[in-house]
Length: 250
Image (cartoon, rainbow, N blue to C red; front, side, top):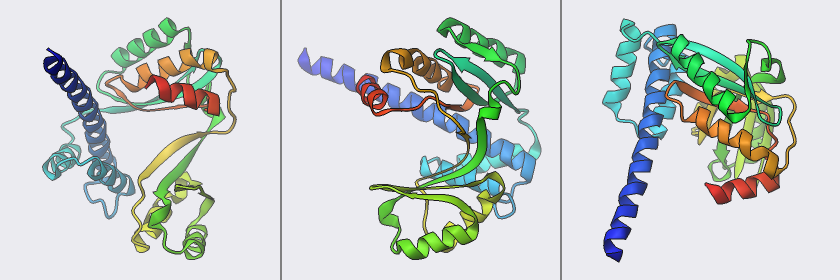
């Protein structure tokens, strides 16, 4: 019986991992498709598509799946609309949601329901986006940088606004416009980032206790799990207290 129970747990865990992998692939395929539709099928001349392909490869997406997504974007057979939704989570936490949908009425209705049930509010355009700035963000394991001084010089020359050396990783921030320049500089150094993204970075943060933050984090998790949502950004300060408790419940 114990063996059966253990096998059941393994199957459940595998199902969760497979579901998350499937959701990730869906998001990546949509991003590749839209990037190819908007900027053309050549990653050499389309920085957004190049980034999407790199992220797909990091997720071990099969080559044929990537190629099919590019073909769909080039042919225009997939009609996704990019939408930025804004709102407030419980505790006054500002939330930005990047979505890709083939039915904006359905998506906005479902997102409004999630906000309302959580005690938050889905707001109008411009309500919270002024609290964020569009930035390019690269994260690299520290061991991938052989010469810190040379690396720092190359990043500054390419237009980096900030290069933060941590104990385990380096985080590079640049303006939205110079994302491609930093991407090319890293390629010249033969350094592959662990993560690379065009992100909405908060200009200010909301401080909450763990008890207050739980409702906001629960809503953020529900938004991230929505099929039409690509990314969720928020300005909740992830203090040591919140990070510790949040890690325990994951």
